[in-house]
Image (cartoon, rainbow over all chains, first blue to last red; front, side):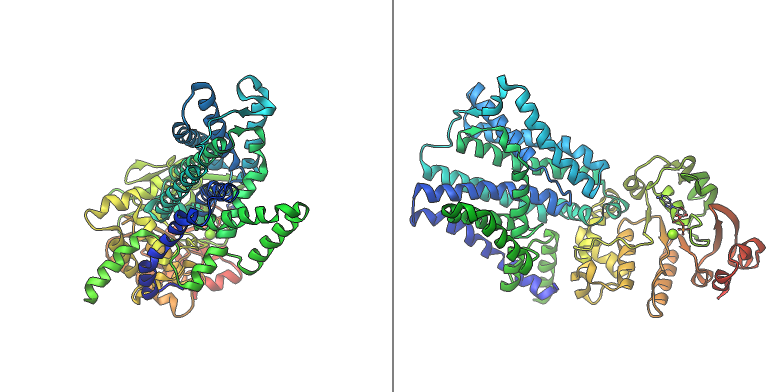
Length: 331
Length: 251
Ligand SMILES: Nc1ncnc2c1ncn2[C@@H]1O[C@H](COP(=O)(O)OP(=O)(O)O)[C@@H](O)[C@H]1O
Ligand SMILES: [Mg+2]
């Protein structure tokens, strides 16, 4: 249970959260190995992708099984803008995010009528439709072989690493701010009980659109970054496997925590690489890790760690005022 | 004086079942109206119809003379008519204080706040229903609160919109001996402050003490309307409540 005292302590311990980005910024002092940095770059992209799902699914309760849609559409858009118009990655990635917003609005439409499992199942279908469209217009999309020969983020792995870190830290920071804002509070109320939120005077339709749009944007910039990192984008990007990964990483870290997705993405990316040599066991070991986490830490790694350390997790930022007014009355 | 809320020939059919049958009712400003009737009479459906959660097949709803029949629930809430639910609907994974803060973010609450910040508005509503003090109650998750507190949390959320009329769907449902009088005096106090209130109950005991006027619903129809005294003497009402429920009526 939260009480006034540990809420105050929690707020003052919030600074500890900055330890993680500082460690990641300093990491290249240890090694600039191409292979290791590539693993971390991938983890950063997945952290953004998973946390974008978490805002929509974990915070707003719109349990989409088709997050790969935003990721994939943006990756293709970034690729096409780069290939056909010669735009540089620093332009195509945000533009990819903008397409993620548009797709987000389109996917929000069925969610207004379909609730819970019905929406989840419907959302599963969208990426497949996109993959089919891609194959139908091979002249533009490259069809089965995709778009290749895209500009890389940078020829220097270190620069690519820092670019991905900037993307990750920036995205998580913004998403966290949103989740703890007034808007985030409304998102959570929609997750907990949509009818009660309506009855309370909240235009739930409007806020669901916001959540889809924001989620689409961050999934989109992750997709665009991935396209340039690999210098390639193919229709496999719409595979349901990608969508499930987003949910898995978020769930491992702690659904609805935003920042938990970072832990989930790093854990699984590193595990994947460690197990590369025993490829045939990779699926089994991965499954065992997942089972262990869900069995012993059902609310996710992050919630458990923060609980043990007494660190803060997200809460409505309006409560900070409480501390201020209390401090004044204490003194 | 014009009624604050009026329904004209409100009708709702679920397949072959007529849940609300040409129901016309007027609610005066400042009164407590009790809406009673056996289980399944259509009382909750009536609330759903006037708050926009269900659309009537025919008939209209007027709030302060304005036709609100086709409006969305949040629009109606922002016009000053706010409801609670028979099966309580707290935001379970949110703190009690966060539950009420959401209501303070509605358009109406923002408009009415003039200058006050969201947090002090929130605390005021929590105090009104006596969830705080003690202050630690507001840091409990809604799912950790007892049933009685959760019922009052629902009302606190509604009050944060500064409604003119509030619709309570079985506010005494599931309350024990200790909680019932707290709810009773809360409702009385709110009414004394000028709030118009409609209370649904299928038991009459609490309502007899509270309501200025009672309307009786049976199979979707209004079969009687009058003061509590008149209602308790009404032949048709006694028949509707025949058998076991007849005892409940006059306890
Ligand atoms: N959404 C619905 N769909 C179908 N039937 C419903 C629905 N809501 C209520 N009913 C039926 O309408 C009748 C009135 O229900 P309700 O309004 O909940 O009664 P009360 O609140 O007076 O106990 C009941 O027979 C109930 O089963
Ligand atoms: Mg009912």
